[in-house]
Length: 197
Ligand SMILES: [Fe+2]
Image (cartoon, rainbow, N blue to C red; front, side, top):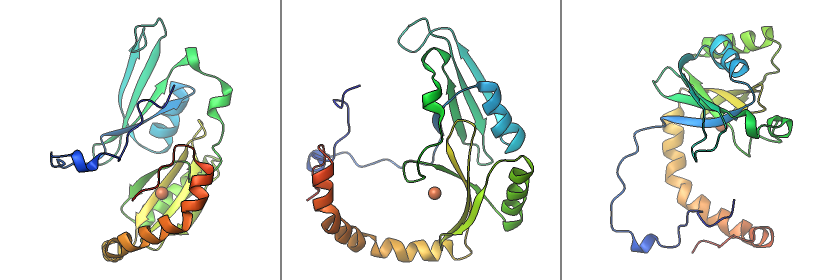
């Protein structure tokens, strides 16, 4: 895959159409090594609802490569989705990723009791669980699924909205400082990096 389809922010001054409101996340999709194993983890262990197991004989480009698209529903009606695509699978893909800064996804619970119950449930299932980590505006536990994907279950702090309102008011200044501080390092490391104005 080349980079020819990468997005860009270089032409924002040419944009005339206002941005419609994105109302939320419908689904995030990841690859899984085995549909049945992944269903057990997300439905039987984490309690999500199985919404669909769509089986296809051909891949989206018409190739003779069967795959399955799984959808698991969260409490807000949105989904986490998975592809089980055996023809292009390999053990190399499904290793534990190095760090949560590469990516992770965070589920949300309403109460501390629910988060504590998940800690207990994961421990009972012999799934290593880390945290809770105090992020000030939220409190999070972390664990990995059988595919090597980093999962988080977070609980909003009672002052979540006020803390983020304060952070939002400072964000522009903080980002300006960050860009200035990291510019040299980024230019040295990223061939595609084009520093923002
Ligand atoms: Fe997170």
